[in-house]
Image (cartoon, rainbow, N blue to C red; front, top):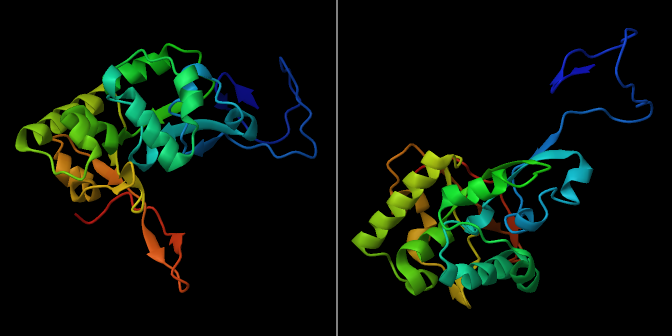
Length: 228
């Protein structure tokens, strides 16, 4: 039995009800939480999140794999779409045609999502690649370490993002993901929490990969609390 937005009772109910659903032969479950999605762009033009919402998922997290769209200046939009396409196979043409850019800072991105008629609960990681480009400009796409001033700019951006409501994670890219056109990501991306040095309490989510016997890579467990 559901009252408002809560499951009030489980079992047989013979009392009055505003609506009765015949769920015989079906599974009745709470909504699923998908903590690893790449709906960052789609949610700006399709707030219902089709087809995710039709598979029992009610909550999603974006900003995974170190790629995302906030913070982002207008001049950097194309590069971040290129990166999302290269890492996650989301077509850049679709993003360019559909994205409704109404933000620059991370907090503005959350506000833009909140103002749309979302069909899902949405949380967003603070992705590391946009942080580098935000602080370093074009150099953020190259395997160059940030200067002290650029590192400080990243710190400020992370602090502002966490204050605006971002989950307390800095999301790093895949270990084998190219950060720029054909180039591997720089060493500072391998320890984003340390590299950025956010002043607020924050962890990091990352991918771990290990080589199989045939030399191929297979996914290992995700580590949300690396021993840094």
